[in-house]
Image 1 (cartoon, helix red, strand yellow):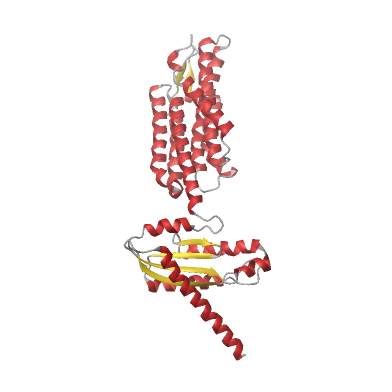
Image 2 (image 1 turned 90 degrees about the vertical axis):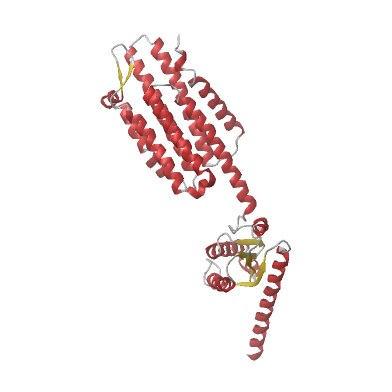
Length: 379
């Protein structure tokens, strides 16, 4: 008969995780690395649960060469647990903005490979766990290495979340807490030789799925608030941000790209996209978080800068864009802009402020056109 205490957590946790994995495989179309890492971690937990269950069968029903059976059982369970912990870390790594390429993943897998080597090489394995003459499992003097291994990856999780804190945003505290919870579970398993680790890993994966769902929400929110081509905030973001500026003095500028249609007609629409991207990148450099794509080749800057500082930065922006060449395009990109200043109160209307800036933009262009005609007449 299989000892019930050894399986009461492993089997249900493993089955629930397997069902979750099957459901995701069938219905989830998302191919993001973080989603794939979550599914890999779930698969590792499933394998671990199977190995734990199989190890109990070997220990109880093994009759032929019982020593080898017990060694194999513990080896399978220990390696599966180590792989599951590694994939939990990999899940968090995939959530960062850094591209987790194969070389980075291999470098992060070094602790896993070292720990597995301890389990595979008999002289080292005998220090991690021992098999008595009665074919019973006994913790060895180096059994703490398993706890150290888990601690290494928990530290790596916390360090990764700290370095890429902007990627995790309000989920940072939850990530750190889950990492510490995972370490506590491994400590309990090491110190008291319980069998709750599969159950805890399954709980962690459920929490990770919640974090992934929050990431999906953030991604959808970003899509709704940002313009994909320019990388700037969109018109909806402009309205939201304006509502947050109640009681503030603001400076607003509306600008467009001079002769933008000519770029499209002469060099093609791909060149037009490059012009939009160049303008967006430069605007982010000068007014990060305060610049918006209003539509087409029109952009808006809305800031709480003082008027003199705002005027200087706008002129620096115009000169910076004009100084940047584009590959395959002979013409330089130039901007025209109009400014407006306002105090935002309950009666303030964003459309009125934009219209005021737009009138100044029209005046700017008319003055430049008249000046060009005058110079042409003199020549």
